Image (cartoon, rainbow, N blue to C red; front, side, top):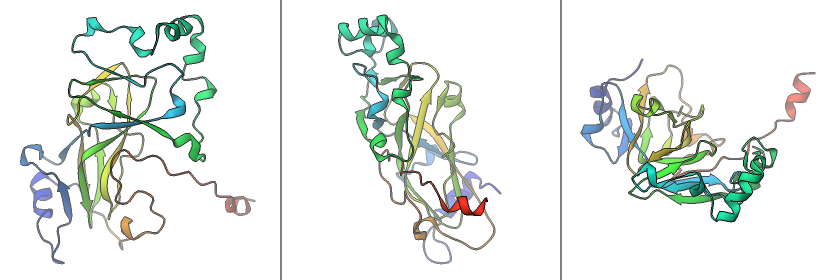
Length: 237
């Protein structure tokens, strides 16, 4: 059962144990909706370094006028742009040289990008790790985030299957951002919504689970190495 906006507000007050079930910081009543709270994009992005083709920029500062931009802007030099014209396959993100091995920490080294107030143009060929401005804590409820309808209608994806949180999760939310077209984003723009649902059963709070990877995360947080569970070989024989 999903919480309404007024119920979210009520859950931010003290519960029977003396503390609130929901913490959202910073909080502004103008961002509270009918059954959600609006979340905002932080001013920092991260990109996995080896996914950026040599000589290319991971993003472009927006100049406020589309006529001032061209394909050349994605390249550091004219020579590198000409290399792209001659050998485009070397820059194509389907090229296996840009693959991500989820088990390899080396593939999770990042380049940090600040989003200027004038805006930043994101590439549809790059995946970006962003963060919410808001820090949240959730107790006795199931939180999850999704894009606002206006974000979806601009073909901005703000998470890849990882929009579900956990009872007991504390931290800022890392966003896995992808765009369909070159798209401008701005610091502190509304990027999504957080929802809360009730659940049944005994609790296993995220922040008390020793197998949790991302409790108290702050800023765009890289992926923890994905384990390959060899013990399953014995179970499926």
